[in-house]
Length: 224
Image (cartoon, rainbow, N blue to C red):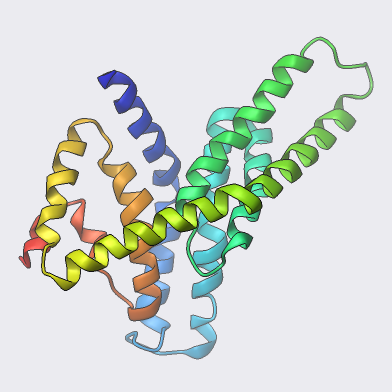
């Protein structure tokens, strides 16, 4: 059981880690050019919201799709996550991306396994391309109707909980959940799945967020 939980944590981390550069680029862009940034610039700051809303979730979903279903899984995942994103563009759909990405890769992988050895000669390219498009479309619709709203609700609850902790100066209590999670390699899942969506929203508005620092070191929660 412990090994499975550790593998799950590593899998979630593996989706995010290759795309950390995009988060860094977003962070610099927000810190420098938003209204409360170091060098406010209206034109440059216009890139902040699209990068946060579209680019980062698509990158994470595509990475998850490729991990499970290869290049075809990457394309299906990128299409599918658009449904979740467009269901609510007011929040960052990182959690939805980490769910939809592997799901897209899994679906196309299973389809390929079923079709292996049964594909008519000369129709390989046609079937491959149409299958990606059809699976991507179906998953995008499901994401728009169900997955996106579900993740929006979960993030709203988590954000409200974090806000309560911040308002009552109880952030050190977060370490009670983070530190044991490190044993199971779930700390990155908590960081990127919970803290990062909240932090990116705060960074877009204020240019900074304490949430980025909580998982790496419990000290900031204590004000250190």
